[in-house]
Image (cartoon, rainbow, N blue to C red; front, side, top):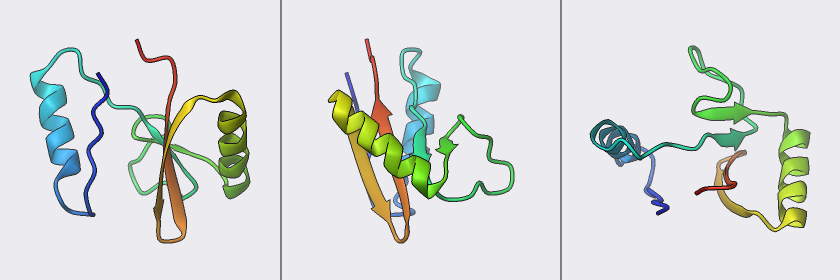
Length: 88
């Protein structure tokens, strides 16, 4: 099953996600790709994969060519995307 949590900033998406992960042993979170810079304490590959704007656009092109599933969220000038690959 794929569950997508969607809502405006500050609506509690991360709180719900953390609660689901804590309560269920078969739930995981996929890191999103973003072209923004990491904030203090953020590590690449945990919550986000930090890439340049060029890498972000190239990754999008590659994914679309391969017909993988992709979710895209635009937030101000920064972009985020979660790539759903080989979920089973």
